[in-house]
Image 1 (cartoon, rainbow, N blue to C red):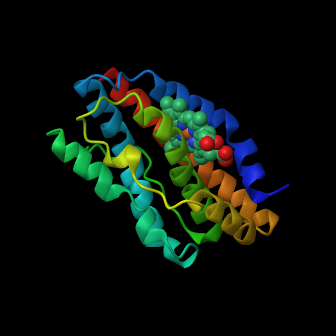
Image 2: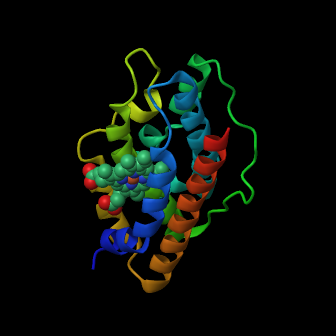
Length: 180
Ligand code: HEM
């Protein structure tokens, strides 16, 4: 089984939960869209920062072009919204290639659903985060890297744990911001 299939299978139910949490936001409404971005930012920013700190660039050479913290901050600023400062209850610590790979899989994979969600966002709303340009083949390139990095069972186990934790952070934030 490829590392990708193993990660996808192990996190399928986590994905269903984040999908459910974020599908309830009204992206056609400025307040709903702002809350959606706030929830994403609250989960996304600390994970991306933890990946930076853990040295993710060692594992994927085009990392700088994959970063999206700037995009989500820019969208929030254009909407006149603050970047959330509610620290997540358990800030994620990422260390080692396995954990880096698992968290990276979640952040990069979230672009795939984002493409569909972007269609529900009206013209005129800032959408740098959801629309962030991906060079063609970037997802495939990441999956190939995952196969190389997650060559042993121990690394794979760490990756699955980190991916589940990353999904859980999105799920928590998604539920919290929906309630307002
Ligand atoms: C309403 C919210 C969401 C919807 C509707 C959604 C939908 C989707 C869809 C349709 C795909 C498959 C796309 C394709 O194969 O081209 C996908 C993949 C994926 N999404 Fe989501 N998604 C949502 C939220 C999220 C969030 C918040 C995350 C993580 C933070 C996430 C992580 C992933 C990952 C990792 C994959 C890749 C799965 C694989 O390995 O093939 N998604 N999503």
